[in-house]
Length: 343
Image 1 (cartoon, one colour):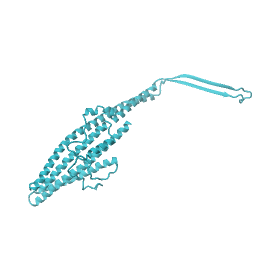
Image 2 (cartoon, one colour; image 1 turned 45 degrees about the horizontal axis):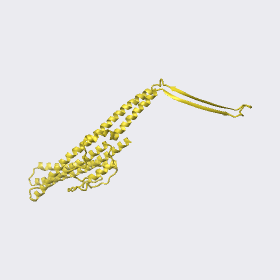
Image 3 (tube, one colour; image 1 turned 120 degrees about the horizontal axis):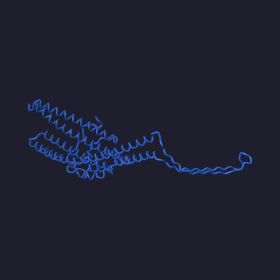
Image 4 (cartoon, rainbow, N blue to C red; image 1 turned 180 degrees about the horizontal axis):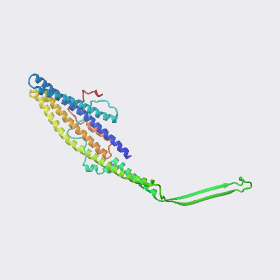
């Protein structure tokens, strides 16, 4: 039962991780597209400026090189997403392509939080299914040693038998008289093995080594569970710091974007400044979403370490990532230039 629970929760954790990585891959494409758009505007401005004598050939070539690098980065992001999407499809089967965002951002609060690490892990050894399975395997190995060692001990058996024979008056010999007989016996039998060719010794020695192996497996399961819990706790804590940094970055990018829009009206800013501001905003939003994914994965690792990860957790994650009370005013376009079939 505990081995089954361990496998089931490992599968759920893999599913949640692949789900988050798939979403992060889509965000990487969006960020790469924003960089490519800004690089294209920058390269076009340098090309026109070179024709007017405002920029040198080196400056024009450098801007073109940055633009080509931005295109390469976008292709790399698309390839990474296809690989991550394929890992998700390995778990759930083929998925229809969709351009819908799944995550609704709240830049002030992450969806999940946890109490202190000590409180979380104080009952870890009794709740983790992998540890429980290893504990039962260790107990079974100890019982096997006792079973094999019993071959050395004397065995006392109570043996009883009874027999009955009835012969009629007319038998095979003429004038033979019939008879009835009954024989019963009861005895105590003592068996004490003196030598069995070494087979018992080998079995006992093997069973003792199996006990040590089971003990090591139990310790490995305990360490893996505590390591998983510590990783989940660290991701939860670092995600909050990442969200705060991303929030400040988004605020600065929106301020810069507003200044660029106002500056264009007064002819003191260029279109490139506005596009560059959107690039910074896209990058900040991606970092904020990455904090969400780390928060979800860390929370799932803690639930799995405690043996509490189940299908209800998936529903809880889904509901919190699609919070209808929080709105994201930034329009989100998901890889419009990418064919979902891989073209």
